[in-house]
Length: 247
Ligand code: NAD
Image (tube, rainbow, N blue to C red):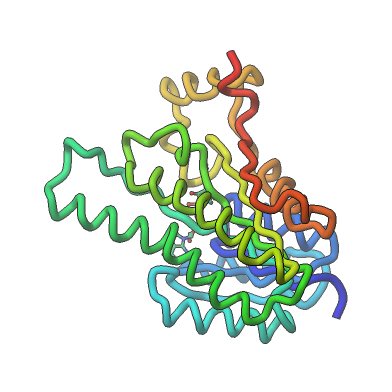
């Protein structure tokens, strides 16, 4: 089999879709993970260049489903050389507007998917990852800039950064590097509503480029962190924000 075996979570749309396409474009074989988007995932499967791609399914909040999904991906790819933990959710739950029960539910779901889900995918994937393997986590600027509308989201992404740094140390003796990308706003379904005027105009004005990121720009960084030459970027958190905070 040619190329590397790459598992991308949440790959049916948005940033994950761009990441899957970027790896396939350089000759890798991609396991396209989705939760409930079989049609979109199959469509992407048909569009990716090259051969040996697969579609796998799991709700990342369910540890048993995660384990089965990673086994399927490893079998289809003949091992997992690269894991990209991209799937994530952003639940709107401002602290002053929710009941205690709603607050609990938002925290549980967000952490179960964004942090514990990613950690479980990593645990399962490591059984199939050889020396030279790469793990890339998709975090967010919310990890270090605050998320007033979704405090659990910010906390989950800060946790993901810390998880990546801890594993960068733990896995270096095994020849595995762990990198993190932390984008600000990216044009995807997740941000559709936020990016409408007038709020969208204010968001775009945060960057001197006068726009938000394109999914392909985040994918390019993921490809770099997963490259054979990126061992020295292990533990790095790439702050991809179009110079937003510099003025
Ligand atoms: P998106 O909503 O388009 O895609 C998210 C993906 O995660 C979808 O494929 C969805 O099916 C999957 N997913 C959600 N819950 C799941 C679950 N329980 N089990 C399995 N899969 C699940 O969003 P996106 O903008 O492409 O986001 C991708 C990643 O980038 C997320 O981790 C997000 O937090 C992060 N991010 C996005 C932005 C942005 O502005 N769009 C900024 C910073 C970070």
